[in-house]
Length: 96
Image 1 (cartoon, rainbow, N blue to C red):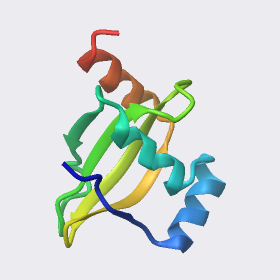
Image 2 (image 1 turned 120 degrees about the vertical axis):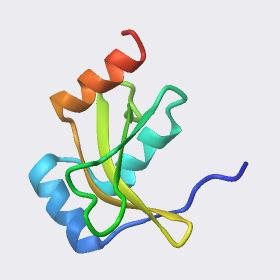
Image 3 (image 1 turned 90 degrees about the vertical axis):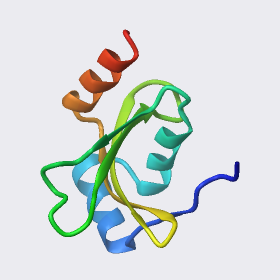
């Protein structure tokens, strides 16, 4: 199985870094977590189906919540941060 391709909007990435302190480049690491949790984003899926990936960051020090969609066979990251709700979902799914 090959690694997924990622894409994002650079303006949105810069805004995300300012607001949440997480770059979309760093957010990719959540997808590498073998215990990651993928969930549908029911709130923001009106036009396109959107999802969350909850997974450990590169340093192993926190749980990232990454909002994304699939577009043309690629994972398009549209938001990322360290959100309490994401940590709760991850911990519940992995019995932490």
